[in-house]
Image 1 (cartoon, one colour):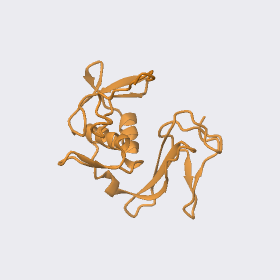
Image 2: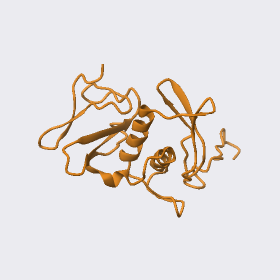
Image 3: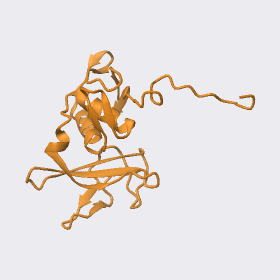
Image 4: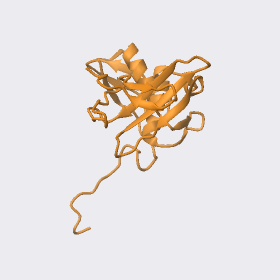
Length: 173
């Protein structure tokens, strides 16, 4: 310990409990405080101590639950998968989005997150409809190989007739 310069202590439970919690979200020029902790479904979304709801926030939270490979068992307070992804599932459920949305909007394609690409994409389909719900997550402002940027839930992917996922060119203005 004589040659140690920095000692890091985890007081949030990330290491000791394998648990993370979404505490703030920035969207539509608002900083939204998210109350509650751990894998509890109880919590609120507040701006200046007032409850906040918006279509943009709902779309962001749906993207967080669909573009995700974690499962949360709320009754046992346990997760299967990455704690960061579990925190996204919990935040969506706190907002009122059903954890069963993955069953309703079945995943048909996935480009998994990789540290080299810094993004993940899922394509979800509702029932027999040909409607496809694209979701992506990644580092904000990161340039994809085709030059387009990852900016939250911008629908800048295109599904070819053969099911191949491609990024639309010049889709972000």
